Length: 98
Image (tube, rainbow, N blue to C red; front, side, top):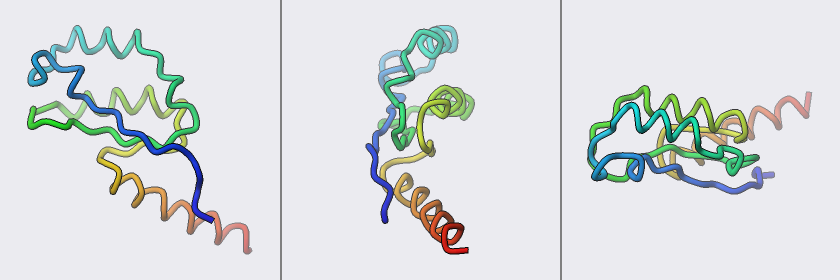
């Protein structure tokens, strides 16, 4: 009954200058030019794998692009992703039984 599909992580670290600083102009260009269709029908967690301070709007901007294609998008790693998928499964089972 558990939903099948690829679980992937989008790491913001490569989008940062020297993997530490987010330059807004460069980041927005990356977001505009990137092919987000690679996340089609996938479950996606958005993370930053280093200790950089990344503004929340950067996560939200990435999520807004990925969510067009992905089944589900969360802010966090694979554990958070699985935790977010599970309640959806319960709701789907309840709806199909009624």
